Image 1: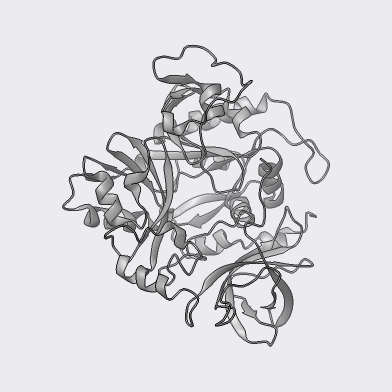
Image 2: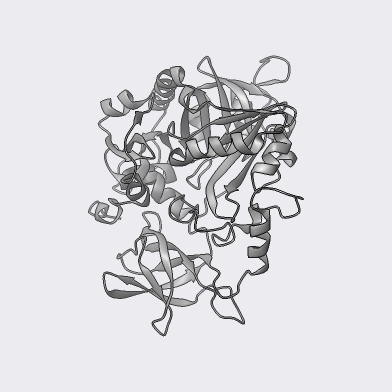
Amino acid sequence: MTEHAPEETRESAMARTARTARTVRTTPLHSVHAAAGASFTDFGGWQMPLRYASDLAEHHAVRRSAGIFDLSHMGEVKVTGSGAAAALDHALVGRISKVALGRARYTMIVAEDGGVIDDLIVYHVGDQEYLVVPNAGNRERVAAELVARCAGFDCEVADISLTMALIAVQGPRAEEILRGVIDSGAGIPAALRPEEEGAPADDGDCGPDVLCGPTILRRLRYYAAVRAVAAGHSILLARTGYTGEDGFELFCGAEDAVDLWTVIVGHAAALPPGDDDAGGKPLPALTPCGLAARDSLRLEAGMPLYGHELTEETTPYDASLGAVVKLDKPEFVGRQALAARAAREGSEGTRQLVALAGEGRRAARAGCEVLDHEGRRVGVITSGLLSPTLGHPIALALLAPASPEEPQWAEGAALEVDVRGRAYPMRVVAAPFYRRAR
């Protein structure tokens, strides 16, 4: 991938979404980003770093080494009390009451008609305590919906977003980098992988039911979170992310964000450089990354972005995410509409999210029409770019059923995308486009 390729990534899906939101806030780390020379963009009501130097360099750093992201624009809504689990079962499409202490679940909140209000991650962080994380632009609405939907249950809902910061460290070297930062973490059984044979012994006595930093990092499961201490600060340490790489997300108090970021970056700076980047230069252990790289990384990983793959005009089934909907629950907001939509899966008028790959270097962007082999419109691109990792165009598209007899689009099916009046061939492929080595 050559350095002139930012022509293809400059107007990323996240950046396009960002243009519609008025800047009203900066994160606790804004001064750090400005000092590092970041370019900013408006996103979800926040001024966020779009890039520091090169979209492509930041993208490759995460794939080959590690990147650090400020995600403090994301929302955090706390739901506590003896009725918290039942309330969230009622409010959301997933069965949150089945999420073990120390684990997390991807889910959605939908309207009565089944349209997606937002996609969420819910963390079971304590006895009768859950942390709901919505997207930045939807935070106020999600918090208000949760207050309304949880009324009548024995629980309290509190939007704590403006008191929190969120830092993500993502990439193959994430665990190595954080070993010098995470002091200890709660040893919650459901959150931990079994110790592998031949693994290092637990590294010291950090207290009852507490594991020292290297051990908690090594053993923490994917989609798990525990309370921990990092550089002397109380945090929630989660093994989650939006890049397709292994990595961690650190929730901390807003007042601790600058110090925590500085410690992480300082520790990483003392580590030896890793593999060469695309230009043949050794990669630093850790690279600050903006929203443009986050967007290209998530698309390669086949992850949806609200406002593109997910909107209030789409249901989870339209986005090929029906598995998150638990229709075996007796009731939840939107259940009737979603049950009716599930029964119509593949019929005329329904849609499905499909992964497409092309050749050459011309990427299809959101809004481009998708055509079948006879030139008929069958759908629209929701996100697309020239993949920095794979070197060819990739896209997600909402498509009508392939045919009444075989509604699912088969891998390899040939389609065309109208890009500024010219048709470019693409084919149906399996998602995700990129899968990290285990």
